[in-house]
Length: 171
Image 1 (tube, rainbow, N blue to C red):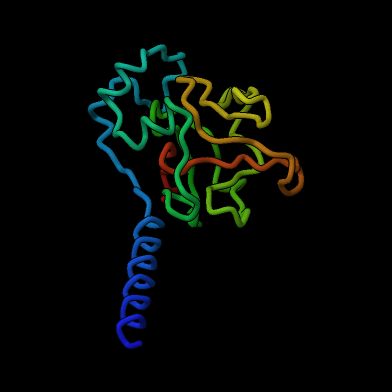
Image 2 (cartoon, rainbow, N blue to C red):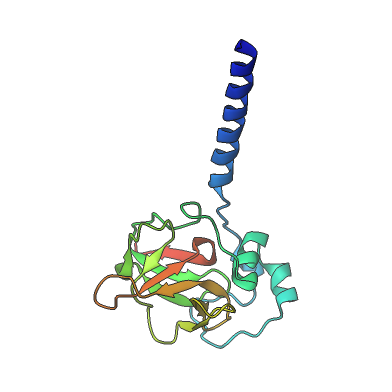
């Protein structure tokens, strides 16, 4: 009987450990000096082949930005950031959101109720036609999705993957 308790306890411990490590996720910071397309001021559209982005971007950023991937909830950058500042596309540096429009959506991803300006984003239907995908208007990298369940005044929730965002705090 003690043998079975021991085995059950060991199996439960292994499962819990696996769950904890699986929830950690990967927060990515990378050196933008190796990205010739990264700029907070240049608004010129960037047309770069995915093969070239793959050489420049860290794998986790590339997966989200170019392969429409996502990070697990509560694991990416900025989901719990409360500092004042501006959010940028981590791929090309395009300004996207002000912290003034960020809110806690309870989803585990950074959420905003409106973009910084009308030229920041490109929105279109996902390949499955069910959700509205949000892309950076400058480099057409996948950033997340927009939903109609946000707060006033727009009632929108721009639900972004934190690893494809950069943040510059106001000093």
